[in-house]
Amino acid sequence: MNPMDMLKNIQELQSQMGGMQDKLKTITVTGTSGGDMVQVTMNGAMEVTNVHISPEAVDPDDIRMMEDLILAAFTDANTRIKVRLASEMQNLTGGMNFPPGFQV
Image 1 (spheres, rainbow, N blue to C red):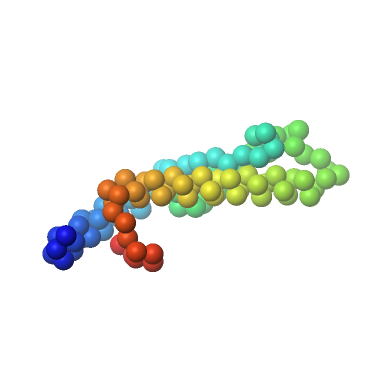
Image 2 (cartoon, rainbow, N blue to C red; image 1 turned 90 degrees about the vertical axis):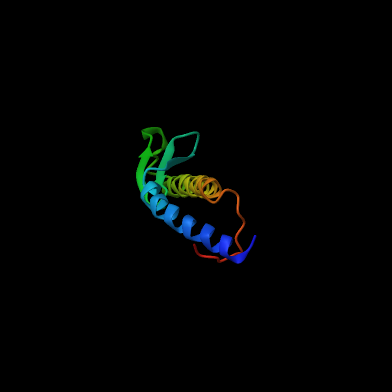
């Protein structure tokens, strides 16, 4: 690809990225742990939007278990949103591979 075509593609991609920023908050995933007893919902802007804890998961004598369940659900949600965002980016760029650290 010649440099002028590449520049044109990058400019087009930058324009599309503006729309992607708006779309991020509409993308949501839910991470779970403890057999769905703890659920953490996160949007594409990496913001936690909801936390649900089933009453069965609460044991006042085992706070450490609750902390572990919340952490596991958050980690699951974080992993899921990263996978989802990578897929969205792949669709947006048409599969173009950019070097690490390249900012569009």
